[in-house]
Amino acid sequence: MSVADVISLLGGIALFLFGMSLMGEGLKKVAGSRLELVLYKLSSTPLKGVLLGTGVTAVIQSSSATSVMVVGFVNSGMMKVKQAIGVIMGAILGTSVTGWILCLSSLEGGSGVVQLLSTEVLTGIVAVVGIILRMFTGKTSNRYVGEILLGFAVLMYGMSAMSGAVSPLRESEAFIRILTSFSNPILGILVGLLQSASAAVGILQALAITGAVTFEVALPIVMGIAIGAAVPVLLSALGANLNGKRTAFIYLLIDVLGVLIWALLFYGANAIIHFTFLDAVLSSVSIALMNTLFRLATVIVLLPCIGLMERMVELLFPDDGSAAEEQEMERLG
Image 1 (cartoon, rainbow, N blue to C red):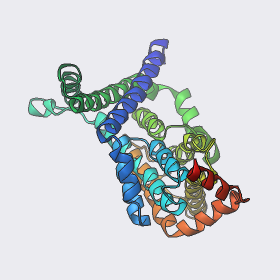
Image 2: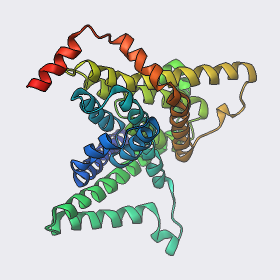
Image 3: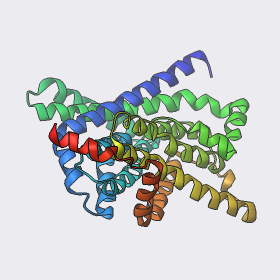
Image 4: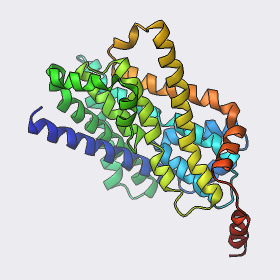
């Protein structure tokens, strides 16, 4: 890669992250305070909590944002820890929706009508409509919708810039050699420890066009991405009360348990069976599917264990009597 390619890649990542942030912020503005109210009222059962967390996170494009809101509810006494676990599970699953949105950038238009439906043309149309709503309408809700559309357009342009910048790497033997070294599960998990699951998956999807991202390389990175996304949620627990800390730790616990369960099963089975598909080259769609299936399988397996996980965080963060005192002070103050 040349210096120009590196700058283009960094610029693409910047546009991608800004677009994701702009779209999420616009969606939250449209929803307003109703989003928090819905989160609280519609999480009475674990299954409802999972569905709610999935839906909200698919909309605002951030499992961390959803989980941080839930930590705030528990911290204020509006929601119980057990109630919050289902919503956090849904948030972990819902964040995989971004990967499917990014698959649009891999679609190629043909000619005529088909070309009009290409990603470039559709993204351009969305950008034009977005800027018209943002700059030339007086209604506040229309401006927020314009921000959502602009965020989506910027995100897609950023993804396109990333893909274009890394395309020369498909011919680089040194890059392929480095990337394939991530087939080591532990190393791959460490590489995936980024604070944004959506951003990390998007970068991995962009790299997929080089043809060097195989199943063996992608799986441990996807696992690491899941764990790394817990970092901002854990930061939200700073200054929180006991139950707030327990809730924040739940996000990390779910992802760590998911990685341990599926890594042990998969790599244990591979040691015996020797899977033949490990060298299969993955596309952006394949990576999105892998990410979704990994998260869905984790939620399905751990959903019946909500009570057990609640007891685990209670053991990790024992009540020394200060929690009741904090709640009483909050009630009086």
